[in-house]
Image (cartoon, rainbow, N blue to C red; front, side, top):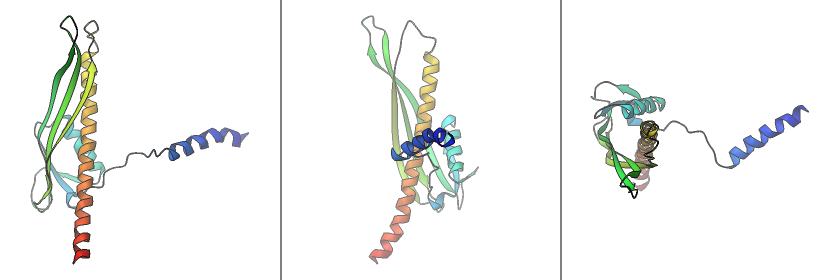
Length: 176
């Protein structure tokens, strides 16, 4: 009877591993980003979430930039709302929330690790003029979701820069 009760758990574990599901791990940052100064124009939730993600990835956050400290600069992080569709009564029925972030990274030696990049994300949502109570909460949740996704997109780019940084010396040594 004991084995029979464990069978569904075993089947679930096997099914999850077979479908390719893996828990999200922290990003493998470039070695030159062990100490990082985070400069976000305006700060806010993006700065808090990015700081937490960098620390989870093993980086030490520094209050000031300087020698031996990489610098992640985010000069632009802006939300914008656009109208997607309008009903026959000239009422807006769908919106899109756009989020644009520009960032660049200088490594601990002051060299450009990631040149300035622009990342754009958006989410669409329907608006019901007869039920306006949940609209502000919907917009806030969409913004939170976009912030979380933006942090992941930045970390993926940093991880790719780290791989490229490791591959460049190996390619140079094999060519020479």
